[in-house]
Length: 289
Image (cartoon, rainbow, N blue to C red; front, side, top):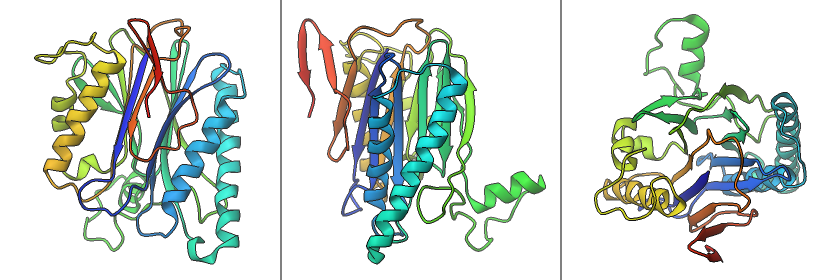
């Protein structure tokens, strides 16, 4: 299994309100996350970092790998993280409305457990196609799901978020479980890329499962997918993306056993990383900062 991620503030935003991370528990199972601070609320950068750091550090202390127990644990930890955000806001009224979306996945033996709140997404990449695993929690989408009818995009606040961390006392994560097959990749992303690149275009740049021209690293390795994320990020910046852009890839999820080394690469300007970001290749061991 290989994991790599990249985050960039983009050419327009003054700072990066996204957070991303990958953490291993004591059973060797990874928890990967992308959080996107709600840009209209002050302090949302802090909220995104708090959620990723809190969940990640807590995950490192446990050894659970049963699907139902992992889900119950994550629900509890999400509630604790949300309470922490609210407490920080209570002590500083200037950031009392800070909020963040999140999309996360836990890669267990034979199963991938996915959850989200907000409009950060998870995709299963299989046979060159991207299957959306999450639901965008916006007012328009929620109304359409409830009524079964198309809602006019001109509806006031149609794109406003209905689920997130912060502001509200409860966090309602939405869940799905996937059984990975050989060759499947997992793709997590904040909503920034979607503002300038369709998902088809994103896949054209990532080229999951295909060797890129001139690409020397082993297909699906840390170095390989790190390069793919760099190409994707460069393409979004070239289109003057108006938001932060963050993406994470996981490969070889169908393998029954985790490698003894944590094969993880990090490439980001502002990431609240706590897990050991280690790359193991040709005997080289080092931290990517």
